[in-house]
Every structure is written in C-alpha cells, then in structure tokens.
Length: 224
Picture 1: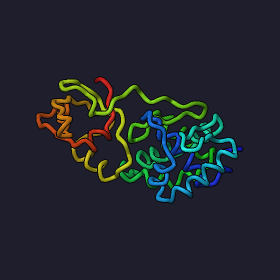
Picture 2: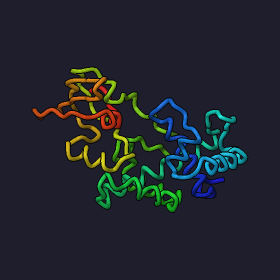
Picture 3: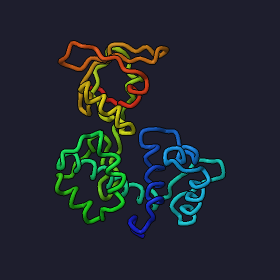
C-alpha cells in the first residue's frame, strides 16, 4: 500500500511519531500528539488503534508508540514530501523560511510521489531543508548530524548552526533579524543555566546576542 492510500490524519500521525524522536530520545505520547494536533486524546487513541490494526505501529497501553518497518517507511515518505516542498517554496517561489512549514503541511498531502521526485530532481537533490533538517532520500533516511542544542555548548566553543526548529514562525523571524540561520558560525561567550540565558557572538561581528532558553533550545549546532 503506497502512503498516498492512507488518510490525511494517518499520514500526519505517522510523520509526527517519527519526527518526535529525530532530534530527541523522548518517545511521543498520545497526550502530546493530541496537544500538537489540537484534538482530544480519545481521538488520537482511536487513530493509533486503527494504525496498529493496519500493522503500521505498535502501542502497549500507557506505553510508548513505536513504528513498524512499514509505518516508518510511510512516515519517511511524508517527511520527504514535506521538506522538499518547503525547500521548493523557499528556493523557487521565494517564500520566507518562516512561512513554509504551514504551507507544506497542506501541500504534502496533495503532491504525488512522481511530483515529489520531480521536485527533488529540479532542486538538485538537496540534502537539507531551509531549517537544516535532513531530507530523506527516496530509498533511505539521511541521519541528522551528531548535533547539540545551543544550551548544552560550553563557553568559548566555536560552533556552526546546523538546524533551527521550525515549530514557531515568530521565533524564526526573530532569528532571521539577528542573522541566525543554518551554517551561521558563532562563539558561545557565556552560559547562565540558572538564569536561562545563553550569550553568543556571530563570527565577524562585535555585538553579543543573549538568548533565552526557549530560543537557545531551538538551535542545534556542531563544532565549527
């Protein structure tokens, strides 16, 4: 069964379950899914049971939700569609990087596998979307780099931004105004964990920038 034969909620559920553990080791729960989707926990539970009956995931009562091999393959197909659409919107249609997530959430359910492959080919087979998230290939997922959240970086370390969470468009616009994007290199000049503040300086600039914990936790970095 191709992923296009699944209902839109089923596609959303599988993509969310897989994406939840791409950059985190904490498994997603029914209550977390309900909160993100804006529906009741009972609605999510019903959907999870249907997907389990289809052999797409396993879910023990009050336990974690795990994708089967088939469920994971479908989830990656949706992630691939979403991130290629985001990249197309930014690079070809000149959308802002803060605009594309919600657009892609709609369009990913409408594009066919053929169109997805054509977009991939047209863009030159990009490896990352505008926010730094890896784009799965058609046959296998490209694992994210061994990155750390900015809050975990020790002072005086020189790092490069590899990924910025696209969960909050307002925060993306704020980062853009500061010059913070994937591939930006910077130095962490101070960490105040009990004050929830991280101070950085972008390479080539003299001004220091202080970020609160919510902003710093949305930025993932690797050694420069």
